[in-house]
Amino acid sequence: MLALSLQLTPRFSSAMRSIGIRGVSPRATWSRRLALACLSVSLAFAAVGSAKAQGLPTAQSPDTLIKMVTQDILDTVRNDRSLQSGDLTRLNALVDQRVMPVVNFPRMTALTVGIHWRRASPEQQEKLMAAFRELLLLTYSDALKQVQDTTVQVRPARYAPEDTDVIVRTFVVRTGKEPIQLDYRLEKTPTGWKIYDFNVLGLWLVDHYRSQFGQLASARGIDGLIAALNNKNQSLRKLAAKSGS
Image (tube, rainbow, N blue to C red):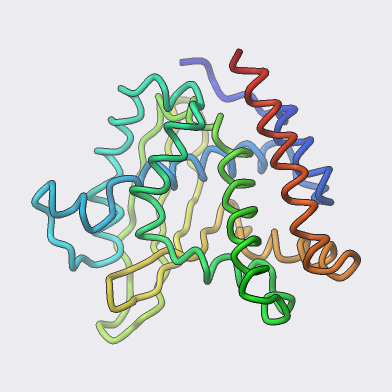
């Protein structure tokens, strides 16, 4: 497989500039895009229903959960040309069915929007979650093409039995490339461990987007932030359709 390009793709750079996100180095950008792809595929079969289907215990430690599903999912993507090609319909269905059940996305979005989240109405919060989810999906979908020569090493998590918030450290290893550290932040809920943030190269996703979204919300209000995200998502959909045609 071709080595990763370290240049920004038009889809990613356009998305970030249009909503006010600048100053991300090319190496860090590509590493985060690849890591998010690995995050998505490593979680795809971690939902409770899938665990039951594979005969896996549903009550697992966070590091065991991530370790057990990673290789299976990498193999799945390697054998699924539609996912490798960035098929948004296939990817969207996979995220809905497999990823979202093991991610606390309301909390992730709330932390990302920051103080403005509490000022948003329930309807605005729903719209923010939908727009943010789609932005991540559209921006990073083509990074799935980069997982062919990728493996993930999971480090044993260090935490007390009573802990309800932990960090699981992993390394994304690519042939001929330096390993990329990818840390998952999880919380223990009544239905099991759920991810609500992750860190690549020292930058937590929530912190990065919060600074950008906060500026937009302060300048344009909650509805202005929603509109900016929806406008960009519309542009990204058109770009994805054009590149796939």
